[in-house]
Length: 151
Image (cartoon, rainbow, N blue to C red):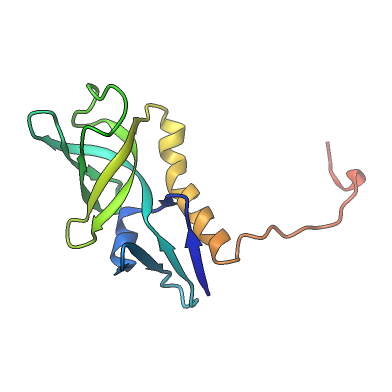
């Protein structure tokens, strides 16, 4: 099954090795035995800034616990980015440029995340989306009445 995914796909950095360049897009093939390929152009990652480089901190090395990536940003990234420094956790939406040993992402949006709950939930959000895309995210409905619950 092939899926076109217009919204940025939430991914863990380790998953980028499963991407294959396809014309001006990328194909993400799930490695769980299903034959599902997702065609996309943008990805959504979250991670901690490990290192910054450049006069305007236009190059970042970001880690999400599963891998690292190089993130470049140009003047088109909106907002005040003076908070960009090592140890800050952030959300990044961008275009995947290369998925080699150190994947390269060209950012179009970077947002600081200071809430630890949001940080802890990220891997679960990524897993949930994957299950939904694989058709495994359907909830099991059980018929129960209010009397079945002990209050």
